[in-house]
Amino acid sequence: MEMKDNNYDDANSRKNNNVSPDSISAAIARQSYIDSPETPGVDIDSTPSGRIRIWAAQISDIHGVKHIVGERSRLRKLLWALVVLASFGILLQQCIKAAINYGEFHHVTKVDVEYVQHMPFPAITICNFNKYRKSAITPADMVHVGKPLGLMDEDGNLNSDLFSEEFVRQMKDLDWDSEEKKRFNYTEFTYRVGSQVKETIVECTWNGHKCAEHDFVKVFTHYGICFAFNKYHRDTEPRHAGKPGADNGLRVVLNAQTSEHLPTADLEDSFINVGFKLMIHPPTEPPYPKELGFAVGPGSHIFLAITRQEIKRLSKPYGECDMKSVGSKYFDHYSMSACRIECETALLLEMCGCRLVEQPGNGPVCTPKIVKECAHVKLLEYIEGHIEFDCPCHIPCDSEVYSVTPSSSRLKPDRSGKSPAMSNYTQEYIDSNVLVLTIFYEELNFETITQLPETSLVGLLGQLGGNMGLFLGASILTLIQIIEYFVDECIHCFRPMAPKKPKRTYRGEDKDVNTPLSVQHWQGSHPVRNTTV
Image (cartoon, rainbow, N blue to C red; front, side, top):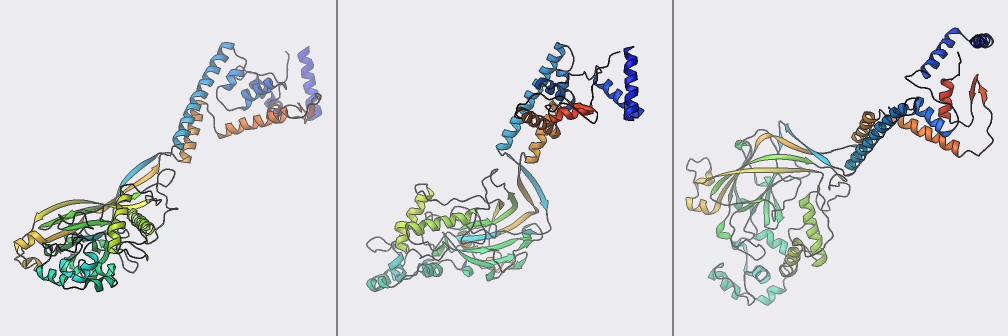
């Protein structure tokens, strides 16, 4: 009879509210789903535990949580709770490891080889180990540079092994007092007494065509005047190699002029070295043969097969390069060599009040005496780390590096006439003075070495999302559900205490004004009725 009354009430309700049969069937199906064994029903009340059970069972998308709060045996609830807690612990561990790894900013290196039709040719800087030509020094020069360069002792006595008797006689006849009063230009002296391009570079060809004198630019270095081929200039186009091989590169015949050899105190190894210091570097980078490059001696034909590398480094926090804070004061492009030259220049300007001839800038040039007593001493202390001078040099983020594979053969006079310069030399002269250099690309490809972040921000989010989906079946939307629930709970907890209000009907549904909105929404879409059969 009770069932009959209920059916009667439902019929009256349908009649009064004009509810369609389809909506009634959907409501019955929804109620059957809620009360089915697969999705056990929960008690609907306004207590915190009741709200959390409703949220966990029917609102949350976290896998396994509804099995903990459903109407199941305690053993099954306990097992599901252990599984969920274990999954959450593993998820937390993996997320912490991923976050720590991302915070350490590790990087990986990508190596690739690119093939091109034309390869930019590097700059070739050639320096004679002999800084000063003996025949170019005059007795008047000796008054100013003789003692600082170690060419005479403190009493003014010349080294008889280096100079002729005629030169010694001229020194004795010189009016020293008047010469000492004259102004001495150390820069002009270095230009005049240093190596000359016509005497040093006897013959040159580039890509099978003869070079001209203007193809070599004079540059000041620690070795005095050096000659740079393919040096960067704003008004000239850099040279490119169109083919690999020895016939498509640079070939130069050099003369060391050992008869002009004049060992001086400002070069440590000038007493024992004969030949050239060679440096292969990017055209935009100033040469620094003082500590870089390699030595080549006379009597040989040296083949240098070069390969090019492009290195692209990551800036902070992944690496040390920082292009934002890097600049060059005296050069058009920044490089480690440019920075070291500028630092040494700033050091001498501060501690000695002048700069060396080979250093850039408009500061006063040190006299030979100051060079000996201050400049060389301070530079040596700075290089050895005995002087603290704030001048950091950052590694450039983009740089070029050239690797060299050398090979050589012995030289002899060219009697065929193909090389007129070589045909005029005797074997003895060649062994003591002549050197042939052939510099070329081994292949028209270059290697790119690129640093990449091991874990990017997108990769970190992917790892976190993957772990959440694997262990809890959660996603960003699940996090939003959790945040929404806690916001509703906070609003409910901090709402002023008031007497419990009766439930009110809204569109035919009973809602408790003290229940969080997320749970109210669920209650409104899943009405639960106590039916008794």
